[in-house]
Image 1 (cartoon, rainbow, N blue to C red):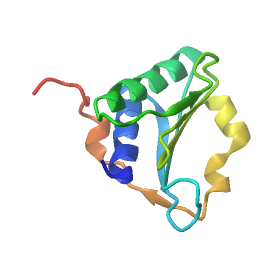
Image 2: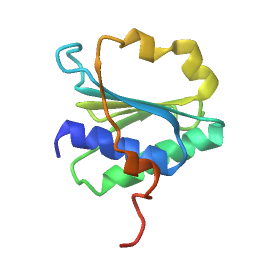
Image 3: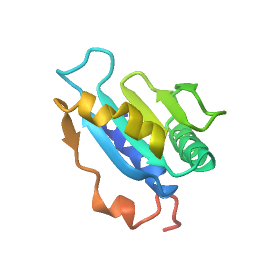
Image 4: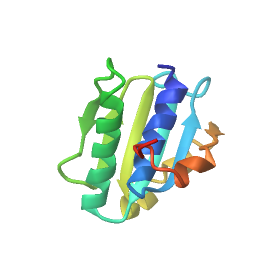
Length: 125
């Protein structure tokens, strides 16, 4: 799976759990340590954990993705590192404090398809 596709799949899984303000950044040419960032947030520790778990569950079906995960137990800032894709799931007040969007403002934003917000990823066909 291409890293862009993985980043968008993570965004979809997050949005399915009502994640807020999901942004995907293309860091190619901007950073050497990863290709894409997903930054998203939830309103409570439980929601942050649910968003992160949704991402982990959804990407497990892709086979060879074995991310490093930090912060899942606390539910304040969960970091999921797939290598080429790094996901930050923040509690909304932690996100405001660190303001990663400003830090990575040189990176291009990837459009998240509108249907991610209207069609559940796991809906039966």
